[in-house]
Amino acid sequence: MRSRLVSRRHAALRLWQATLVTSIGGGWLRTAQAQVDKLTITGLAEARLRSFEEMVRPYVQSQTLTKEAVTLSLPMLADNGHMVPLSLKIDSPMTEEAHITHVYLLSQRNPVPLMAKFVLGPWSGRADLSTRVRLSGNQSVIALARRSDGSFIYDAQEVVVTEAACVDNG
Amino acid sequence: MSSARLQVPPRIVQGDVFKLRLLVNHPMDSGFLRDIDGVLIQRNVIRHLLCTLNGREVFRVEPTTGVAANPLFEFYLRATESGEMLFRWVDDKAYIGELRHHLVVEPANASKPTSN
Amino acid sequence: MRLFACRLYLGVVLAGLVFSLPLQAQQRIIALDKLQSGLNFSGAEVQSLQADEFANPGNIALDNGNKLWAKPDGNSNKSCQSCHGELTRMKGVSIRYPAIDKASGKLFNLEDRIRNCRVKNQKAPEWAFESDELLAVSLAITSASRGLPLQANIEGAAKSHFENGQRIFMTRQGQMNLACTNCHDQHYGQKLFTDPLSQGQANGYPLYRIDWQKVASLERRLRFCYTGVKAEIPSWGHSDMRDISLYLMWRGQGLPVEAPAVRK
Image 1 (tube, rainbow over the protein chains, first blue to last red):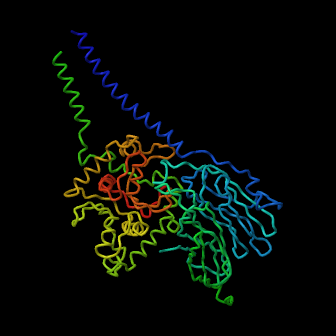
Image 2: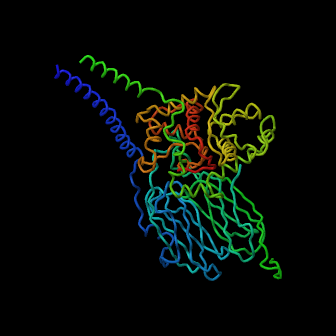
Image 3: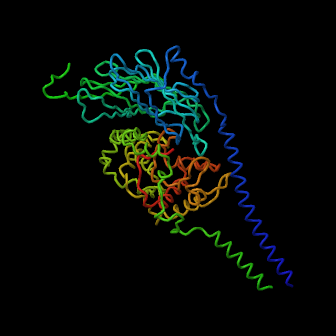
């Protein structure tokens, strides 16, 4: 009698446990599989990263290039690669004799290496600029500036760009 | 439809170096994304944006697909004269966008003769 | 032995009933004082973009909406302003939606009302769902209610819509077999891939979504949620979307309207 009672309770308990495990476990498995699927769909195949030389050479060519006077600011961790605020300050008197003529924003990983080119002059008064750029993945960004004497100066910053939670094109 | 909005300081005095903020209405379609039906959205970005003051170029930017949609440009100008400020931009579809602003620059002090 | 079996059986039946009973109308999972706007779960850049009075990316659409409001159109040659007055007079209007349209008996969201008014009163061609003009005017009207608390009328003819919306919110669906509540009530604040999950509140719509690089309606966002759980997406204009919207207004009651809101 007693053994039959225990076995019925036991059976009920086992049935309840089985139901729980199956539903939760099934749920977890589906979520995990969906995560793997998403990685494949988004194709996180990283584009080739350009070297520093590749990025600046088209503009600098044989001129001098020094890392000074330019301060580039981007968030270290960008919420979304579609719109990343970027600002830069350049220490220059912006006089007729000594001013910044061009500023180039360069990307290490984007399909198009040049993000924007700005043309300034003594009329600008200050060679500070801000804009919002697109960054396709973690990379270095370079702000390259040309002085009126033909020399180049620059600053660079690393940016981590997190992926959007859900696949896009909604 | 609105093409852009411009922000300049409320009061500009001759000799000031002042900041301009320009927000332009443009999708800056990179040509890399697809729409909801999987069709590639054709590239259409602003090729160049020019700012002139009384006919003289005072700012130019040539963005590429690397600039975000509805781009924001912030830059500086040294205030020398009042006048007609014209922003003009052309995109891949050869659409021309324009924004005009009458810039008022106050003389540095009452005794100083107004320039130009 | 028989008594035990009976008790066990009864216990199982009761447990089954309790867990399968639909949520009662006034049952809140997230208490009113625990409500948080999606802005709280957004990163610093998104927050500063929204706070930028001048350069908020939604401002372009807002400017357009303001212009369209005053522009005469259609055979009536009237503008929205001709009948409704200045946009500032539309304060409190957007938070009344979704609401039952007396003429059709359907639950209308704000975009439905604008589309309807355009054809019926302005005698102008219909604006497509999610068109730039529709979103611009919707944003302009919503901006008039900036700061006002969300509210919802869920009595009378709206009651069945509210209950349907709540039911959908609580029901697992899609290949991922997830209900809205699983993420947005039970796991908000935790990470889904790389982003923190929000509570899924609707106090910012229509808003500028950086991922889509334009202003988007709540309906578009909900349809995208369906994509997220790999469920079949209902057609544009589907009543389920409006029912969910109504439920969300009740669920987020008290949250202030943000306009133009910015999200990633």
